[in-house]
Image (cartoon, rainbow over all chains, first blue to last red; front, side):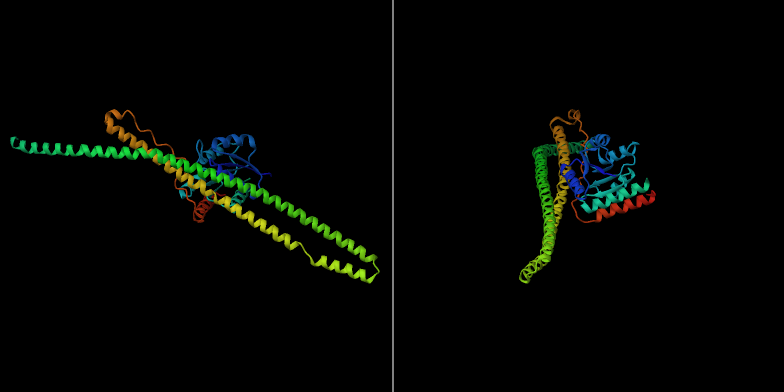
Length: 128
Length: 230
């Protein structure tokens, strides 16, 4: 299956860093959005099958985006990887309750990103 | 009762004296708040400028890294292509030498041809090209590390924006306090304080290479998945 990633972050530099890391890992299908609302618009039209989202964003944050996706039958099983600076235990628990598939604390490494993508893909394929 | 009058008078006198002292003190507090408040918008603006400048510089560095990445990839492609062409040339030369050797009867000419063959066999370009490609690969990894280190911009920017929002909130409170000094609590109560703006950044963001925070997150994720049968 050709993977198409949606990278959601309000920071332009962070989006570019995540996209560069994905390209380094050999992934080419990538679209981007600067907040949750823009992400939903992209999800509707771009045929995305993996979401990498930041948490703190204006308009609609990553947690709200996750909750929206999980409550929408079209996207309820889409893999979601949260990549955020929020590293407190309570934050991680809140994200897991919202049903993200995995969690990366910034700053991340390409290797760390690769491992988490693979873990998510593995768990998703087991579920299906 | 009448014996209390001198005491009451003394108390009144003390209260008046206190008021006389409090008024200039309050005026001094007011001036101090006013003076401090004047600098706050400037501080917030300065932080915003720092934030924009670092973002702009980071984008410039990322542009250079992208350009480098493309140039290195092209260089790798050219080198690999050249390496293949050289290998083909090498094979062709050997084939031709073998053909020529088969047709030579003169021993001196044969000896020359064999010398050429030995020279070709002893000269291998493989090591050189492998070394060059490995050098390029290692350079690529180094500039990828530079790009990853630029996450510091996003992380420190969140701290700056968070602090800036706190400064704005403090300014708002100080402005209201000043307004109350000038117009009295009753009158100024018309201008209620707005709710502080929602902070959409993580003010506790940290740029650290310590794996501890990720390990904690991993442990929580693992437990969560176990409990939920994932």
